[in-house]
Image (cartoon, rainbow, N blue to C red; front, side, top):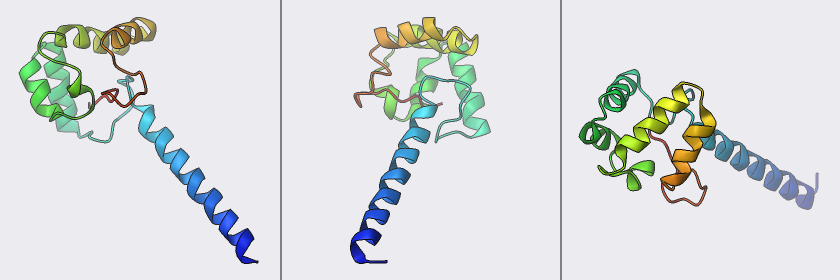
Length: 116
């Protein structure tokens, strides 16, 4: 194989891998049925309790200032918890509307991640 063909193949492979990785990273955002990169059974249980109790302090501590925690604060956490509950109930359109209202999931890098 000549160098040009090898370089083209390597470039295509690299691009394909990067796109697959990006797609996998996007899959969990806003979907409580998909495990995010920070998932552990213990953290999931703590997050579930934080949402159920509308416990912003615990949620904030577990989120460690990453992703969505840059947008969610004590004043809008109850609304965020409502979106989470709606998503769990399968009411994805309603949950998406609240997430959009909160400025989440806009794919602009400004806190669209869900750190469950």
